[in-house]
Amino acid sequence: MNFVSTRRNAPSVSLSQALAAGLAPDGGLYVPEHRPQSRRWQPGDTIAATAAAVLAPYFDGDDLEPALPVMCTQAFDFPAPLLPLSTPGDHVLELFHGPTAAFKDFGARFLAASLAQLQRGSDRPLTIVVATSGDTGAAVAAAFHRQPGIRVVVLYPDGRVSPRQAHQLGCFGDNIRALRVAGAFDDCQAMVKLALGDRALQAQVPLSSANSISLGRWLPQMSYYAHAALVHHARTGRELNLVIPTGNLGNAMAAILARAMGLPIGQIALATNANDVLPRFFDGEPYLTQTSVATLANAMDVGAPSNFERLRWLYADDDAALRAAFSAAAVEDAAIREVIARRYAQAGEVFCPHTAVAVKHLEALRAAGAQGDWAVVATAHPAKFESVVEPLIGRPLAVPDSLDALLQRPARAEPCAPAYAALREVLLQP
Image (tube, rainbow, N blue to C red):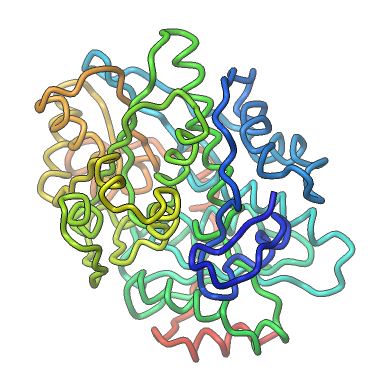
């Protein structure tokens, strides 16, 4: 299968070429040239086995096709349990059991496995440049740490990630370089896109991306949705509806593409924080980006969701059909705090701020009469946000071993101006 740009002004390329490039030459995002046909699916014994089956159509005919099962096994070696919540019919899909305690470990590890295959025999190092609003950078850093032939430059908004997130971003060293940008996530994302589109720079420093704009991040994220939905359907005969907390729309797009492939996923509801670009659009307003605002759910502080281009591509730019297919709601900080405190007091359930956004939206959907089986997507371990969660629940949170190991390491990040010239200078340094 080949891949084309969402902006339709770039030639089609192979999967390997799209993975290596990160962004299309016209500034668009790579999408499949043809959407795989729906089919009847069966769950694999593991997430890795399900992933290999779901991803196979996209790897068909590519140089990476023979390595796909091995890459899935390497990347998906930790669980993503679907667990019941205290409300009947409600579940939580826990995606935070990887090395950095966030869902982004899945896509980052798969991308690292893919690029390791592509870099074999290359005499030119590859630089991964990535913007993060909290969790992406740490997941990418962990996945690529000490990988030969690859260096990583991580940009994050200074002061707008949690203390533990910031520590993770700067604790790796070696081939990982962290830049704390004096701006917002959208500034970081814009700088990365400019770098990926800078042909003169690329001639000197081969670049690729590890943000959700990368196919190597987006496609493998279908795996945990596919596996959870298939296992649930096999047990109950019912589809699994999802509430997904989202900022840049990459994680949600993975579920949306999986549903389009015929996986037993029912309704998909999008939950954002106070950055309400998507809820405004789904309420009928024109799609307009905005300056992001800082919230408790900082990994979703996005005012210009890049993957909206992919969502429009999937619906052939038919905004009416797109609005009819999804619901979206914005949740303010006060509601995030209230949900975290109340659900712990009532049922002992502990959520990170991002997951709490999804829980709040599910409660609203149930109150409006939503039926069926629903799962909120838990994107990060609550211990990554101890300064928010612990005062609300009145007790300290146990830190996962993998996260604790990272927190014990020294951390350092370099200051960076929110200007492309500053990033370019860093990328040109050996």
